[in-house]
Image (cartoon, rainbow, N blue to C red; front, side, top):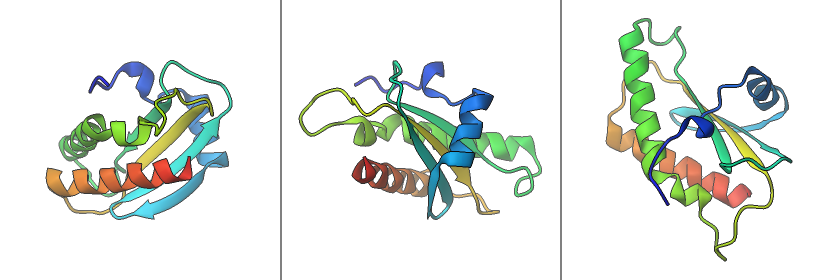
Amino acid sequence: MKQTFAKQERLYEKKLMHQLFKGGKSFFVFPFKVYYVVLDKAAPYPAKVLISVPKRNFKRAVDRNRIKRLVREAYRKNKAIFLSHENGEKNQTGTYLIGLIYTPKVHMDYAEIERKIILILQQLQKKK
């Protein structure tokens, strides 16, 4: 599996974001609030991800962008955990929409963020 994060893997459509936050389920793994929903239709990528860092927690755009970069990198390197299947078949259940919202008001280092992203992806894999 390629370790890329293409535009088709990003959740940027307003309609899908609305669907995620209004009809999706959620759970919390510090420091992330995770929203997810499964769409019936299949897409080129089995998951679309939204990464958000609230402006109320980090006033400076530089800080928000740095955290988003770290989260994107951790997801990109470890997405195979969520996308892999036991029997090697493609996912027939549809497309997952995933929203990751960074909640604390302090910076975390990359190793800690990566550990939490791995934990989130494992939990999502169990919920499949």
